[in-house]
Length: 353
Image 1: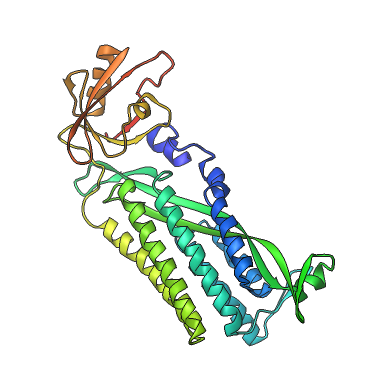
Image 2 (image 1 turned 45 degrees about the horizontal axis):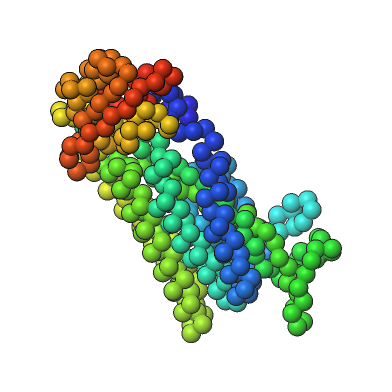
């Protein structure tokens, strides 16, 4: 928000956007995933969830959401637990001591399946919400003009019900409800699954870029599940699925990052008119249906080529504004709106200067 105010003298995205979306966007998926995990009976070791908590906290605190994909966090938790268990390392957290975990195909398969499902959800959330909260930034183009790029940085939390062996939970919480099945005892824990997303749209408008990235992530998530199911025939496929998913997700990030750095900015000063960087929510411009990347060619019948001419033309008819706009396909559309006394004096437009 501070960067938006510094660059555009106003805040564009609502200050509580990320906090509200933290739980709201993925709540339904959390319920569905919890039902599937419990219904299928996917049991994960408590030690893995502890390691997952550690790496997730480090990701959130660092704010480096480029490595916030759940497949990164899940694989890091497996590696951290295995590394500590193999070398006999331990960490004393005061109320319990963490000794890592030993490698086993029995728990790696459920971990791989859950990871694939959450990556699938991650892709859907990026596809649906990645562009909505993308915040514009200004930088100089290759021609030395001010141009805009969009930074999308999101964090999601899914409260997922996990099934864990009950021995560790029982030792620290003897009254915790448990489910005995045969000679084994299991516990249900509501685990806060956290994952993040960060990417930059420069060459492509956010409305087109982030759905593509989200679709690619969904394909990666589906591939993890498909490969993990192969573990019923050959157990090492669970590990192959986790590693393949990690490499696929890394490849998606590298591909789109490199692609966006090449070529010209999508939002840059235009000879045809004034290009829109962003639109303030609930403003006259928003009510007129103006969107990022469109070009305002005429205002109240006057041709405009820069910000000054734009606002001078608005004053020609301060009560009723009529715009001639070029959309993303360079097709002309007319938009008009009655300007009321309390409306934003700049129509709520953020434009390239």
